Image (cartoon, rainbow, N blue to C red; front, side, top):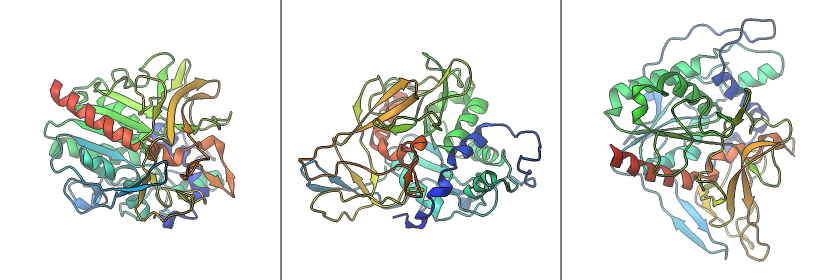
Length: 399
């Protein structure tokens, strides 16, 4: 699965730059700055082809999400997936940096990489909400490579944001119909959504529609010791009955904490910290991760394919694998930063695997400054789905 990304890891190692691009205003022109791209026309989000997912469509969200549950004793059980027939709420998703287009900004033709990221990060939400996922002209991996190489190609730093803003406004006007909505993003997508929330939602009447914002794989700034920061009226989530709140985290192995040069776990600004909300224990402490791990390549995989799920090896044929009891996590704040520390509860005496893959690997070397960024969403997917389900009930009860 997703083998089209097999040689993609070195490009993916520039991904955090895209998050910065999404969150920052365009810099003044300079010899070292990339040239501005020609002005682009707005997208027409009334056209079906401008969306990866919309409700009740045969699109990127209509995929096989079947899962093999691998118990500690090595027993397999298949878990089928079914989208909700008429869910009472919506989800609006902005995907991370995946485009392999050779231009500075991606075009509006979905490639295998855009379809693939929906499979990994968003399609499963259709079990609890109507799915909306717009295509947008994001900053590409090609552009990021060119910047690092000192041969920057033209990019439009505001184009990605403006596309998502257009899609959001179209959704509100034509599809929302007073329904509650969950915002979901990862990396560049989280950066774009952070800007959208700050500019268009925080403290405005439309905030009443926001059930929660799931901003994964990003450094969401909050004041140290507080639950607000870049958002003034949208605090961090503390319980599943709380609505109008945000979940944000960046994941690292607990035995490989963020190094000094880490791209995640720290926020810019005096007295600011990166938010960490543990989807497995919203009130704090350690909780079990209900992961849906890929049984193949990731969004932008390292060269490492998953190891055998059990010994002796027994082939898994489903796209996803769940490993109850193997993974747990807690938010940690120390000199390294604030991050979701993921623990693998290995047991050499049982037949199930004692490790997972998901590190960023370039030239056969793990890049510890990236942590488990590739699988931020996969690690807690079941927890996030459960959270949205409970938040939905709380939101509808209040409404």
